[in-house]
Length: 340
Picture 1 (cartoon, rainbow, N blue to C red):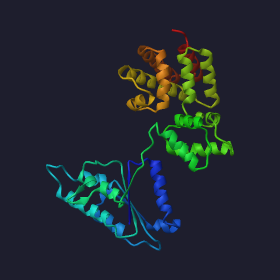
Picture 2: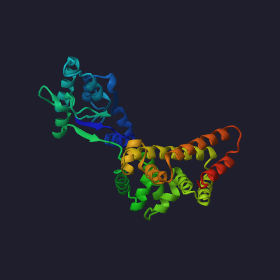
Picture 3: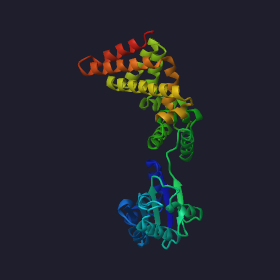
């Protein structure tokens, strides 16, 4: 039996990893008969080990996927002052079984997080815990976290390399900025860019042309121009958005969102400095809009930003109570670009 523990899994990475294990079972029709999904919160060690010990049907092995069991068991252990004997007995049972695999089946535990100070991780009554089982090769522990903003470009580059996609470094950075850490969408965008490039390297222009229409980059062009009080540039950005079929209500929503981000960033950077990655982590936004907001918010005092937000809310009310939406957006942009 091969034991796996997938921790803090990103939905896309987890799907890929489980897909690999399922594919290793062989013929898909037969594989489906040899896969068991177990709800860990509703199961105990005996239930899980029963599935793990069952004989495969016309195949070499079975795949047992257990979700949330270890974290649920951890919560049942009690405290050092008032331990739960039943929970501890179950810890002994599952750790003992993992230390002495007795079948050819694959057993996969999936948990968001575990407390590495608890007995299930460190061990109990002489039994090796998850940490030791991992070091001894009896448990394959894999952290399938979503890449953080600093690691995301490397993930994109590695994924492109794996899939045979030639992409320039600046295009990688731009793709990370535009899409963020949505790994499924990033994979789809890479595939789209490969088809468009048709054998040549993917360039930043390709990303701008194919991906930015689904991103907020053009909205930032508009708010950039508004911040610079450049009416002509703002109108060009507005018309570019309209050519991409952006509705007035979408435009107002996105412009409002950008100014809300500016307010959050302005307020946060007044308290503590940092680069876009530091500030993004503190305000709960992606680094790309935070970097833009850090630059643009220098054009405003905080009361000005709050006044603009009030004006945006007025436009929202007007558009919902009979004002022509396109005309209202034109007037709004013209007002915001006036020198103050």
